[in-house]
Image 1 (cartoon, rainbow, N blue to C red):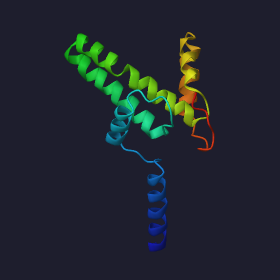
Image 2 (image 1 turned 60 degrees about the horizontal axis):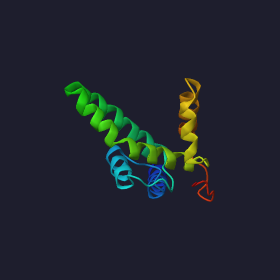
Image 3 (image 1 turned 90 degrees about the vertical axis):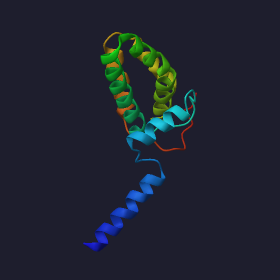
Length: 128
């Protein structure tokens, strides 16, 4: 039993050092630090925690005032595009794949599937 716990702890620390585990607060901090950084990679937890923050923030602020919700959406527009571009880079695609969302109905579904896929190896150079 002790051996299993030690091995599990070692694996968890190794994954955390690679950025594979990211909590809600770390995700928001990273995404705002990389406000307009469209290069690099974003792990699935980083991206989806940030999306959850955007949805919750918009809903809570929208309950107070519609005008403030619009301000929040505009203020977080660039970081949301940047985080999505970095997430797509992690799946070996360019950030331009976000434009597929312009295709009615099907585009959003395809984009969500692409964003939800596991990341690929870091040796790929899909950063354009």
